[in-house]
Image 1 (cartoon, helix red, strand yellow):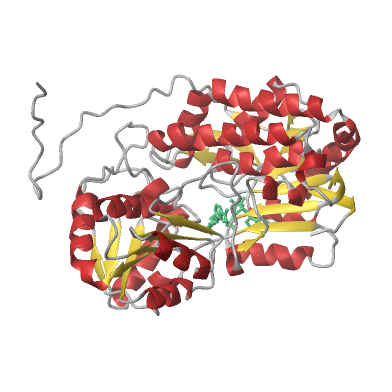
Image 2 (spheres, rainbow, N blue to C red):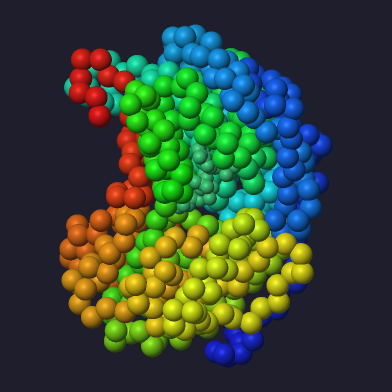
Length: 494
Ligand code: NAP
């Protein structure tokens, strides 16, 4: 006979958990990391270095090279020199290299997960169960396409690689974003110069060691660290394609900088997704999905469900359930396996979140934050709900990129569509309802690249991802993600 488990009554304080810290012994950090160019770590010509820290402790983890335009030119030359041999390698041989990277990521998964959490502040549970396995899955998936490119795009002519790809990524999913970029580029026969974000360079540099272990020909993958100026130098360098993931503001600047240059361009930019809960939805499941939609990775997610639209008859019950659930979220040490919400990635991002939240209060929205004790050092923000939000409030319009949910209501599906689409962005959306026909009706009308139904924040390497409007253009993932890295002779270019 099973014993009854005693649960705290609703409204009672949540269970206390003993801490369960993940050991960091597996991570061996160097004091300094040079630039990864031509298959080896080299000193920067710039002579400049910058510290990279842990956002949960503010301790310096290592010093990292800051690449200038001369360093970027050296990396692009290395990629250019490596391109002919890589392009003409038998596709099945190229696939073997990409498979090797995937397997190494799997073998060293714990090391990558711990380092990702140390450098970025995300909960170890997420780095371990989502970021690193998905990154490996992308390399496995695209390795499988390397020797099948001719069959992948029927009627388009012979696919050939674009050449040298400059790739710039943000700090919210450092290794995963690197995988989204590097895996399809290599499988399609391109060589790459990758620039990770200033605050999270360490897993990209660990990826460089995997590239060495996998014995990729020198120069096929180059990794250059630095801040925005380094990224701008890469955009201006002699590359054939720029693949950018980051903010809409920087994306626009890159679009201007590459206009007329003949460089191919894909932009994966910001979002302000609507997560729409209908009155017939399974509400407990929906509340879990809403919580996952906005508090996953501290809300540092381009497709985060940051605008909750609730149908009026269930507004009160959804709000009560959300408040209750927020009280059980554990905020704190990201290396603790119990932690739900880790550290905000940087002081700058914390300031941005705080400023937008203050604007919400000033503009008259009602704020709710659960009681929780935040660590003294590091960058932290409580999970936050806003009610009484109107469409014109900044918190309903601007991407906060933090653990902050703005709640609005609607009466009819048409009103939900109108409100959901009333944004310059168009990256993702969520629908919660038991009615299949309503899911199809809504999905057809929502201007978003990805629409989830009765779930949220699901990713798979076989599935294309990307936006409309100011969320960018081009797709990553799936066959669509290979296309920007290929030219077709004899068929239409897209
Ligand atoms: P960001 O400031 O635009 O930076 C993104 C990358 O671009 C970083 O490596 C950054 O370097 C570099 N950069 C900055 N200025 C540059 C310039 N003028 N020219 C070239 N590169 C430049 O964005 P973020 O704050 O790191 O990331 C958050 C944004 O990314 C959010 O808006 C989010 O929605 C978006 N995002 C989109 C997707 C998607 O798939 N659509 C996925 C993830 C994130 P530094 O780090 O050194 O400044």
